[in-house]
Image (cartoon, rainbow, N blue to C red; front, side):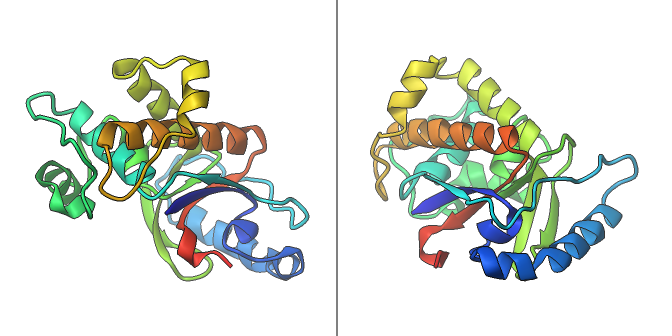
Length: 212
């Protein structure tokens, strides 16, 4: 099961309020180090890192995020037939594997398919870097993630806001129907991105098993 967690980075990583307060200096140093390594002209990286802010958790189901990324990959390959079910691993799908080998360089949905952590700033690139807990993660723009989710919906499902709300409850079991799982992933991740942007928060994807 994958969860999208929005809030201060320290809280997204699992720290409680007291631990997050002790980590403020370390988070700020990490932010500065990350900014130093970004391309020239990159925007300022700034978000609300308040230990008192409770993170909000969005449940993508067992395969919602995986299905959504695969669906986005096939949305750009109209010459290929979309699989009926979600594979056990994305790497088992040839189209996904080819795009990943190319580092999603030609994808219109790069911040969706490549990243698993998004910061509330607007920048075109994604960057791989260790998070403060040492986990290597691909980091993208929350602004572009929201835009790419919107464009993916417009190009495919064309779901209304009401439909997206209903889709958050769709089943997304392992090996289940790919379209239903992708619909849940789109709806839940879209809601998470909107909530995080409104609060100038970080959005981080984590397997449920890694949460305390």
